[in-house]
Amino acid sequence: MIRNAFFVAALAALPAIAAAQGGNPTLGRDLAAGCTHCHGTNGVSAGVTESLAGRPQGQIVSTLKHFREGTKPATIMHQISKGYTDEQIAAIAAFFAAQPPAGK
Image (cartoon, rainbow, N blue to C red; front, side, top):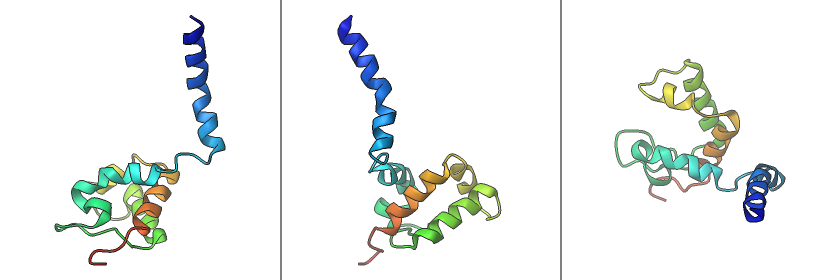
């Protein structure tokens, strides 16, 4: 009983601990993992979709927000981008911007 109460209290404290530590340091990488099917591992595409690795962070943020707002044409990205907050978009963009571009 006491162990369960301690466990519940520890779980309840996790969001505050994460916030105090600046959030999840692997958030961008974790979210970008969902992009690999189309944009390749670490953003280096092997197919017809664009590579994202090494692109400027601001460009990626802007493009994702345009998809989310519906101002940039897309087949699926307008739907996918609606699932991300501004913080998550910034984290994804930072991750891809830090990756070496294709062929480097």
